[in-house]
Length: 260
Image (cartoon, rainbow, N blue to C red):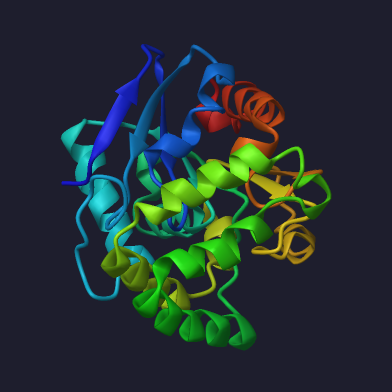
């Protein structure tokens, strides 16, 4: 089973999924600002943190199934699910397969679109670099995920993101990279999901096309979106703002079916 940690005694279960080359430690800055009503279940995805690699190609569907095992083990019922970047792709795969388990699904600097051909080619080229020199791959990519206008202010967070990424297993990084290349478009999930859907995006996000993501959202009353003045890592760049939005939207603005 995937490694997980539970914090807090709240009555609302909030499951947190980290992104690519991350682990459960990324939530430390966000955690103090989240409502005491939440019980936080932080999960290490396959191949990251203390969780083992589970396949040569870790598809989003496969990782969603591993998440389901944890949820069933903990007897989670109608929980909130939030995923950063790749974690958001997995959250959507979970929402597609197990919608009855969720009160809400939050895409945290993530998208429901599949990679376009250019992005797929970039990821495919990255596979060779990952095999040869993961550290070089991290050094080249991680700084670009932060707001370029605030690199001086965010220097310590960029360093932290690199240090966390260095701990990733090469096999885990490769397996997840391959899985992201294969992932399908999940626009239909947003159209059909009855719980709350929350989208947090970054104005300066180089990894996700925030404008495209927001512009093409279904016009459903259960969907709410925000664009923040940051890059791809709101949990490090704007933790207080992100937590305030999460607290407000997931605890007070749920669809009638899920009103607290």
